[in-house]
Image (spheres, rainbow, N blue to C red):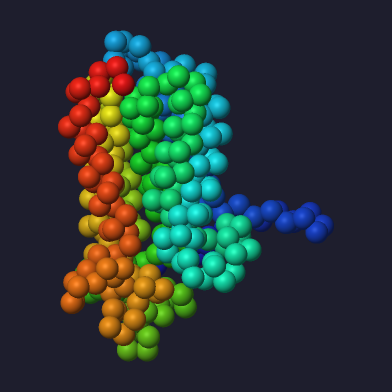
Length: 295
């Protein structure tokens, strides 16, 4: 068993000037660095015309700054509304003002993805960018942000996996992380599901997309890379859901594993339900990509 590292905190530093107080959190830094990393990777790809259909990049790298503005809005609005709608609609229906309290936590990847899709579509339509190639561009560096976000979840001591006795399980001591163990399990050891996701949907998926884009040049088949991203994330998330601690709002005495859809002792979590359409869409994009050389 591995003790959870001592001395790490969700916040990096705090600056106080009179009544003004600013705190930089690891989670916020993960968003910022993830977006900058995507920006840099996208710029490199756009400057290599040979990677794209007809040896012509779908847009100029100089336009990325405008695209990032769209994407930031899509991530924040989509991520927050996704959490509200998919994971805790009753609470926020009764407390609508708290929908705006993003700093209190509560963001959904699937909601953020939907927001990015809408934001990207609007930008691509306005700037005459081929939708499928635009989707490939969005997918290329996205796993970097996913990796950093899951590392931030780990540092924040949140989104732990279920209790376990595997040698690589982490001993957690914070009240929120250890309450699932109650007084019956000491020490409280849980799957580091945040790290599972960081490795699968972050590091491994990122390396795969880089290999396909820059070595195999699959960007010449518009939509293929986006399809691989959808499939890779959907499969990774569905697998890790088997180890993640269920969302409290979905749990009950008859449904201890927090399935959103339950059939007997089996079922699907909300994360798995939202990932299944991603996998399906991913296969459609991959199988139709060669037919859309100019899409």
